Amino acid sequence: MMNKERFTRVVEEMKRQGLTQILIADDPAIFWLTGRIVNPMERCGAILLKDDGEVHAFMNNLFCFEPIDGMTMHYYADGENPYKLIADELAPGKIGFDKNWASKHTISVLKERDDLIPVLGSDPIDICKSHKDEAEKEALRHAASINDMAVEFGIKHIDPSLDELTLSNMIEEFFEEHGAVQDMQLQYVCYGKNAAEPHHGAVAGEMLKEGDAVLFDLWAPINNYWCDMTRTVFYKSCSEEHRKVYEIVKAAQQAAIDFVKPGVKMSDVDAVARKVITDAGYGEYFLTRTGHGVGMTVHEPPEASPSCDLIAEPGMCFSIEPGIYLKDDVGVRIEDLVIVTEDGCEVLTRYPKNLQIVGND
Image (cartoon, rainbow, N blue to C red; front, side, top):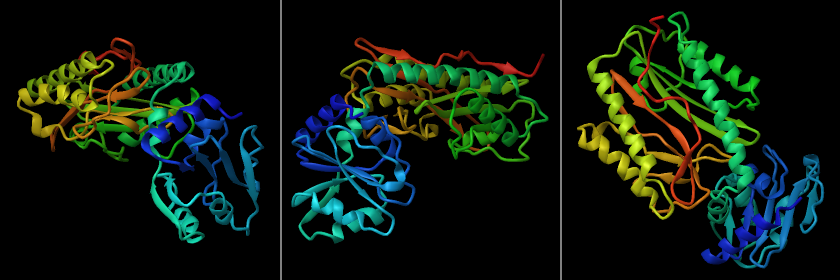
């Protein structure tokens, strides 16, 4: 069914931004509004929303997208032109296009009309999706609980006989056994110096040795909502330098968590974590933003970065994941998901963060 409350919120945000019509094509956004998954692959599937509340859906017959009350349906078959169907319903002037819609679709709509002005139109959806309702919060809590279990599973199965890729695949299988949908990305399992690459993908044949950091960045969609969490442990021993780096990152992350509350700028959340690391002398080794929004996609607004001036508001969910990355030596990142509450934030991921040295049993 059409989620009228969510559609109304998006229309209000459209008006605030001066947009009179937007095309929504991103599958998570359509699901958020309708409860339906489209998965159009290379075909055209979109929803047109106008600022007077008028809603049109343009779907291939193959999608089995049943009619929805309050929505005008336009169906087409393979070989027919869906872009004329869309163009015929557009008013002259600005049309907000989905940022994730393939350019072939956008261009094909524009070719049908010479009185349209294309602009990015995803902000109203993104802003509204960033405010999670109670059902969404519960879905995120559940996903986070599976993430806690996956991190525990990964740490318990650290073994010098397992290369990065084998352990990564074992964790992916664990996720799927607990309700995650298989995704294209690998679970990040990083040994030693590989942990100094913030987005290192697990490698076959990369083996563990004493003193290595083991960084787990584990993420998966569960019931359409993502979890995302990072823990770093050490195998058999930990040098004083690595211990120092770990404690700095831990302190930076806690400072940012403690700072989160309604009304603060997301850029200031980043600044709080960055200051701890910079004051400790490692600022040049903090290579990433502090965090990103999480919901029906794993990276969405708001982000905790120096360039993001969005204001934290109740219901927003995002990661806090500062790190220090010393090339060819070690990388340490600690990541949790938080939801902004009325007076602070709720931390969703709960696996302990005290420095762990494993493998000495």
